[in-house]
Length: 331
Image (cartoon, rainbow, N blue to C red):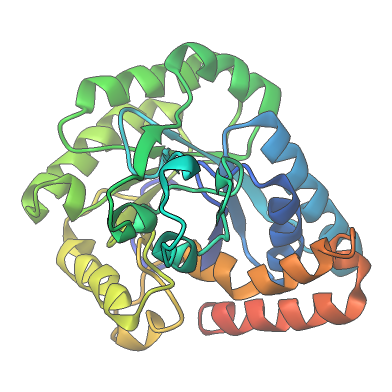
């Protein structure tokens, strides 16, 4: 267990791309994975769906051939209801013809049109829900059931799994951990994601929850990652979300179990500058900010019925954008 008990801040900094736990936009996911693999991410996190994983691997493998990089593939699952595993919906027939469509304007993935919400493109950020002046938009759960988890793991054979949890779900976490172990799939890493929003704002409760899960996962004998979810799915909004992620890290760094510590939830290009030089976490995960940064390039090539890597000029610009986000953590 010595390798697993390594102290914090002793590993190289690493970066994860979050494609979205409920993101099924296969075309965008393939392009996203190609871009960020070329840019140098260490892991890519996708929905636990075979078709999504296949698209991700296509993008990863293309960039591996061209650039030599090959990040690990992680799938996201949950031990209960979680905002990362939801989608928005509404009946477009109920929309007044003179509506200014604030929902469409605020959607970061262009998932909303006159026809409603595109299920594949929506990743459940929830911004459209509060934007609707008539409260016509609602959400529904999009989550893999425990009964399907073992078969999904055996089908996908990911390099890593991330379990989203809340502090009061120790028993359901134990069930998910047991399914992972009994699947027989050999994982390189298991990540546990939780934040103050899931712990009633109490750092002590959050630390206790992580230590409980450390005891549960110890028998798995894999590298553990503690993902601090500052302000979920808000990284493309403002630098204030980056401050929230860093503030959570500062509160929690000394009280977490052995393993790697990773920032997420609100992380963006401002995150690094808010950290103290002698207090840098092991890694960072970029979600909505990473996707939004290159989405215009993906959309541009989609209109020509091409993959982004089939257009070298656009691909080069997209990689440059992605590298700008990653550079503080990779150099």
